[in-house]
Image 1 (spheres, rainbow, N blue to C red):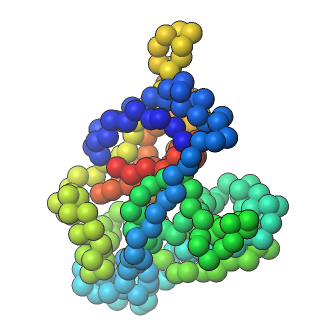
Image 2: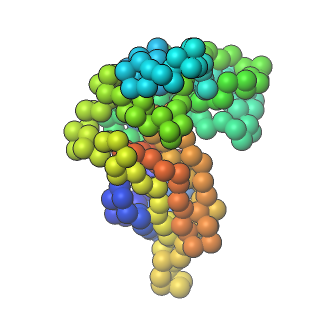
Length: 250
């Protein structure tokens, strides 16, 4: 949808330049949008079952003190039946909605996804993560999994769960970066637009940027300098510029 000039490095800042030709394409109804292509479903390392296994292996004493692991979040799929229901979900600022499931491999990033089981003229599923205790609106939904999203002090347990569910080796180039206490970083970057009148790049302010790793999601906005900086992550993250409906990964 946009011709983005991207310089990617997982531990450095990222600069994005949006060209005028991209802006023209944005307004061109004949523009071809890329579809997100999913691979296989992955075993969920943050399910209560797998996190319990991880605690037993990495920190059994803490698990014993807790008696049993209780969910902190819920992985949810909404099924809105009308534009009004979809808009109601969009108006809930606590929700970070995705058109595709969050526990699948993504073989190709793009601008949209529509579940093949839903007719093209109907609204596709909306996936998200909510805290336990969230008050659901009067819209059809399904709880796909109860989650335990560990705190930073449980990093060893988290890595153990990723290991026992075979999620450390999905991208072998990243495996070495997922060792305990190593290579944490805060995804950050700068977003610019090319101004023909000023003949220079100018920063884009208040662009909404969403960063995701599995079920951990951070929503931020660019500042007056077009700069954004997220919470700390390990390994691959997905970024989503929802002002332009653009997904990618680094």
